[in-house]
Image (cartoon, rainbow, N blue to C red; front, side):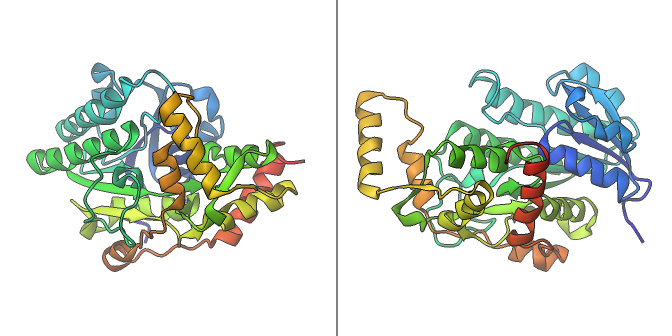
Length: 328
């Protein structure tokens, strides 16, 4: 029996990568009655074709949401400030204030469960070998990580106060067809001969294939044990050398390496001279960290397991990249 069949579901940020895949899966494979929201519906013509009711609405427009949430049973909150649009001050408005507002409005509308998509970025640069859901957040985190942490904490607190079931999901580096950040841009970096491997590439990447993440999100929405919980979702860690080797083979080019001493020199010059280079101290530390984010909690409580291994995920990603003209 499909627990989501005929359930009324809202997906915020359905015009984005994660939200788009999730809304499509809910409508096509799960038989849910899906409403997707976003600001530019032209980006996802496949969703109306799949039976998703698309609504143009800004996350910050409190007056518009009661009609969207009326009669809904589950909300998946995928919309977020990612640092790629607007000014920095929008981060707290969208990732914290608007998230809290949406939880309040969902509770008032009688929504049963609110699945909030956060990020492993809440932990900042990994400082421990194993990162679990109980690992403290890094207070020296960047703006995105800090606001995502504050947003999920507010959502959980409001869930307890208002009686709505809140579940927080912290994905890793989500890749796959239609992924811009962790697929298209990875290819572009390799093609442009930008250095992407530091210190031999022994630091760990924390990927998760989009279908594996959606599997986890569906469990978070339906499993009784998920209510009030947080879950890390990553596939098994790989080194950055291995991560970029997949994209290098797609491009027919060897990813460029930079000696560690030179990377440290560039970071020093960046800090002292204000060069605004993309390689900051925090970014270098992240690329060199060798941690893991096991999914033991999700496996134990929800019965989760990642169905798609990285070799197959990259094969599907490559097929899409070629189809869309990103690869020759």
